[in-house]
Image 1 (cartoon, rainbow, N blue to C red):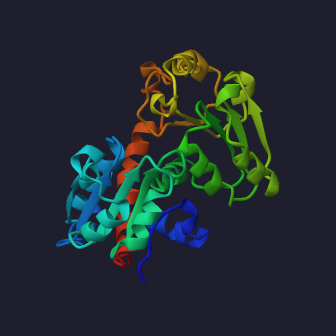
Image 2: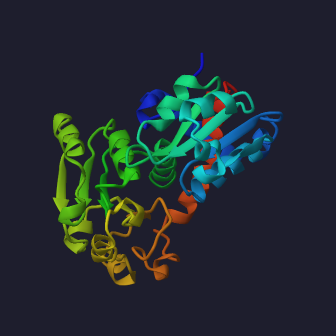
Image 3: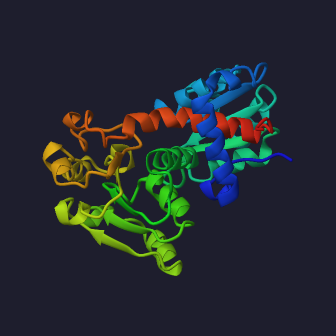
Length: 306
């Protein structure tokens, strides 16, 4: 049966455990998986700019022995001639075995999945979902901490427009005994539907403005995000918000020794370069984990996972 990935919740906790175990095995034994997708192709249909997500999908397929094709902006596709997302997906599914789509409009990958003859992966749709980033985040947390339960997660920065944050909160909410500390300026608080969902599940959370010792003292994970210029309607608001939080050596000195720092990247200046050498900085390994988890996802959706 044809299966797509639109949301991180499309996988049950059991399926997610299996996917992460496969990703861990890929990391440990890359040669075992080097030829599984020979003769297979992934189409990366990116209607808005991306470096990490698009290239990690392509690297994932190539690491499995397959090939990649696609486009990296709407201008270089037939959308510039008026072609619909549904028609594009239907046509491209004649050329490829699996599709990864990023689109600025929420729900566009879902429309594509309804017309496609092959599995479609949502690689980010507007401010809505970014499920493969969430899978990457979960693999990173699991690799460093060995679990998801019983931990306090701090999410800092743009919590209003950050689709990575929304998806991660949703995914982590399925685990026991967790707590969220939501760190943002008033203007960039998480949307009300996220707060309501946490309340409905009786998951404790607090919203704070400052990133200081009091905020960080109990954190197991600090997830930093950039203030996204492309989500703002005017330059003035962006400039006012963009330097609201800067994680530097001084802040890391007062953070718990066991706390890890994550970031979906790209960063602007919300994490100082001087933090990169701190053993708690997990954001570059996080980018590598993105390749492993996308390899596992490709194998799973193509029915090639063991």
